[in-house]
Length: 349
Length: 243
Image 1 (cartoon, rainbow over the protein chains, first blue to last red):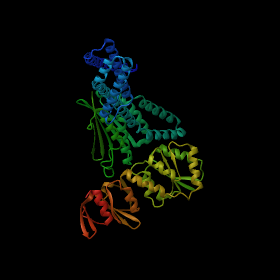
Image 2 (cartoon, each protein chain N blue to C red; image 1 turned 60 degrees about the horizontal axis):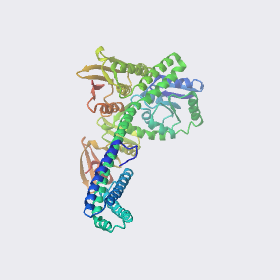
Image 3 (cartoon, each protein chain N blue to C red; image 1 turned 180 degrees about the vertical axis):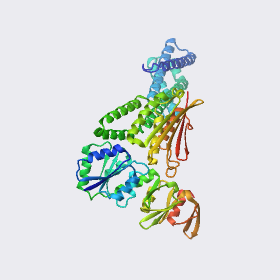
Image 4 (cartoon, rainbow over the protein chains, first blue to last red; image 1 turned 90 degrees about the vertical axis):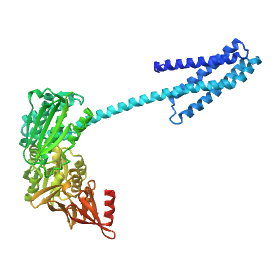
């Protein structure tokens, strides 16, 4: 099939081969049939050319048709009907043309009438064969495209979800920090300037990183310290922090911005669940093939909900870990008297 | 002299309100509080005309604090970001200030209060507390001078008592000035069902349903208490428990 240029080479090659086979088979059969009636070579060649041209036309029609319209239901009925219609039409047209050219040769005209049924049968078989091939081809093509689209949309959704999980944690922190800066501007402009610097550094850090990226613990701790410094300006003496991290653990890697929501959660939980001063303690160790980080915050066992302890921060981290490692067991929470403990394991790949 | 109290857990956030209030000669800041407990005490002690109130604070949030006060003063909320609160503010409260706010915006809020000091009903604000109860999944009550926070999981049932409701827990019962309808609505997303005109039960505590008389049932709780079930209450129970 001489298909349009933009079409894949593969299709063109397949089409030509199929067409060649069909034409060849058709010619042989036709020649064999016509030979039994004592007719001239001119007639034979003309007959073959006209019938082959008609057949080519039918095949082109079908392929082009299916390219733009692929039947969804009743596929096989569609193929049957179109094949029947086209073969019938071809037989009629070829008969008409051949009769016009050779109407003086009675012998030949006779053979035309006699072979009509056979011609129809063969044409029908060939055309329906072609229809089925194109049907399969285009269905497969469509399936492939659909799969690609599906994979694409899944990837986009995943990226969007990760992005959203990261973004959701920002506004409260951001607006409250800006409010603190606004308050400092009147009384302590130097401090205000310092806080603007810290906030900018922190925000730049979060903007630069992307979710797919892995950073060393050292890098993550740097941005975490910036975050904690800002929170300390906001909450004053109420918030104290302690980070325990041996030298050798600093080089271990973890997905960027995974720790911050956990610490944010611990701070919120700690600060909003008690009215006393709050100590947030973080500890990192290497455990077999894992980086293990524990974060502790005080809470009031009497008033906090056992199940509500996992706030938004925790569930978003849980979700991210699942998207990254396909595991649900990497984040755990526990409690010891008035201390809430969050433990996270990061597989070292 | 007009009395004002500032309630916010962040010292810097309070200081900016103070700064903005300085030019107002006839406004006196009688107290600054860093959480709802202090806030409630200060309001009862000083009887302020107006309070500046943060929403997110330690232990109890701004809404919960307001709910504990019999006659709340006029309120200007100051908050950074709170989706559900902002919606509520749009229709009620004197005003709400989104942090960080400018001096001009602050002055406008004060003017708004000064022009309608009396016409500031808090009822619509209180209504949003129902959403807060649902969101926090707890009920805050006043027990004498103390504040008690009851997680919903510890509430066995709620009983009507004139203008109040009686909230029954293992640690005893607490009265709260609120309507049964309020709790029926706000707790409907949890495992609470109104089984009777005067009773809302926590289905987690149900152990048995007995037939009492024709058309009436009695609900037995794991605590040993027996509650009456009305005809319509029984239908709701059956639906909720799938029996």
